[in-house]
Amino acid sequence: MKLRPVVYAHRGASRKAKENTIQSFEVAAKIGADGVELDVWKSLDDELMVHHDPSVKGVSIEGARAKDLPDYVPTLSEALDACLGLKVNIEIKSASDRSPQALDASDVLVDTLRSRPEPASRWIISSFEHGALDRIQKKGSDFLTGLLFWDEPWEIMLRYAVENGHGALHPHETLVDDAIREATKNEGVQLNTWTVNDLSRISELAELGVDGLITDVPDQVLKTLQVRS
Image: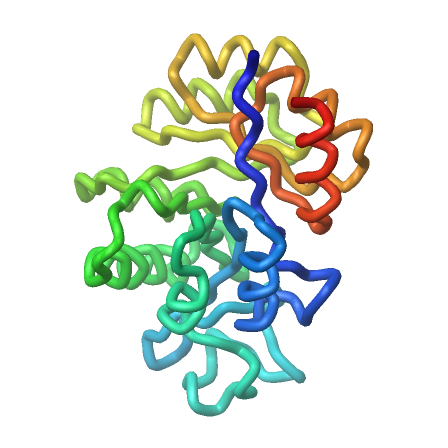
């Protein structure tokens, strides 16, 4: 019998609480999610702030100090404290590809995670900014990094992952089929997919044997996977 996929609550339990907030992470834990997915931007004063969009109420996160942002926008450290016992997929965000901000954010992120008592196995660092993930691996990091992608051919992304030390692929769920699952398995690369809310598709992906599912409806996904088992 296949192991069931790890279920990540997308931006926390984002349909039951405001996304990417402490409450959304606490609710995700309460409903039994295995982990959460969250997004980070580096502020002007080198804090990693948890938010999906580049600005909050018209204020650019990368151009603001942490104290100038609304209280509901947590720092990464505050978010991780709220996620104790959960796996956490941390997505590095940036306004442009291979920007200095993304590279700087990767440095701050590694320092932040290394300062915490939890094992490195709790974290996955993902990004569409693959240069930021390359930087993490080139520094000899023991953190798992996952390439986010949507349009690129998965064969190219898998080759890139293997050649640059990235242990996971994070394709959009529409790209996932038997071929990518078999290829990633042969290379020893995790396959985590986003953002999957259709329960029939959840069953298909679980049957394929994907490693992780990122979803807005973790409670429904968990029930679906429980019925399958």
